[in-house]
Length: 478
Image 1 (tube, rainbow, N blue to C red):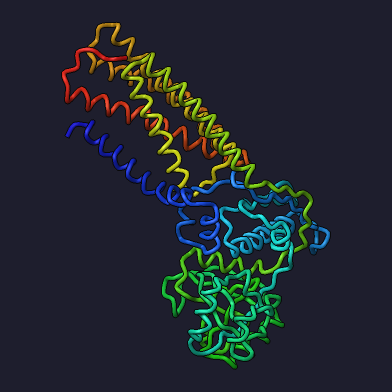
Image 2: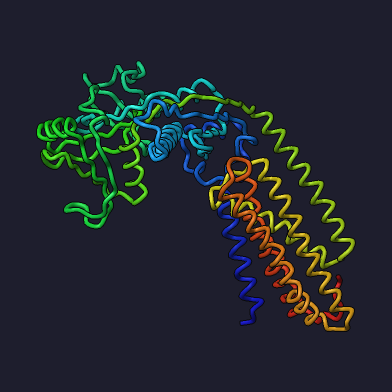
């Protein structure tokens, strides 16, 4: 089979795969904003597959937090670094509970954290979510099946982690609860009926780590816990009195796991199993280790971006992009004729592939990201211009159309590759070491450059080859 057919298959597969990854975004953003917010609050699976918009495009809250290191055991750099890592885990756990999409949580400097929550409107709720003292508890799960009426009512009211708080059950749920119990939300959008009082808190945990394999789980990962002296004694009493029952691990009022107590555990070393994946086990370990903030976080800077401002930014970006593309299309069509029209089609495909790649990698589209996309379109035009000018030179030298095209691509490749490689290196550094808008610009620029090289070198060349194989081309329109 001719190489052009293999290339065409690759291009068609890329188009189909890109459409697969972009369809959820098209379906989600084609709905009214109220419907979008409802899908986010109900944690619709479609939300996890879309191309997310950053703070500057959909509005939200930006916070700069300072860790009060004076309240740590000491202020050595190792202690501060560990405390910062734990604070990031705690905040991420809390934000995940309320279903926010793609929050940005990054360290800035020695003791500061930047937290961006796109789509959040309630400032006080967001500040409470970040600043409150977390509580890790161990609670016994009520024996027997969940009452059907209780679960039906909770689903009818669309209750989740925010509404089902320990000690503050909604009245409609309180009336249906068995005495001495509370209904809490689980990680996987399920409900767990637990005892009202906790058996012990996370203060008794000394260490937690992920291990592979055990007598029960074979090669599956599990989480090993080590308790301090006080925790060892308390945990031994709990396990001795409740063999065969489930013990729920509750962080900030959300049931993270509910393993079965298999036997009395007197030595302060316990194993939590549950057919975990590696990611599940790492998350549970982080929950157990980072149950509470290591020190208070003080909000030193706060900015709120309105959704209307984000809409204006999107409209301005789309307008600028449309005007730029229109002028480029006009120039390419007039100056390079049919070949220019082919380059224009490649530019549209370039944008399609780029947005699909960002959706596939769960990247967040920001306003600087749109600037990066526009820049990559400009560089894609530059690559097409280099190729078309090389083809023109070969035609002027009297070569046949097929040879002129092949020589044009071959001679232009080194210039295109070298020019893009230097920019790709810069984009990698922007993505790796930048934060916030800089990172958004870096990821869109990096993906855009890779995609533009594919469309300029592979896609257009394939179209030329297929066209000349099917037709007796005597003269190129270039």
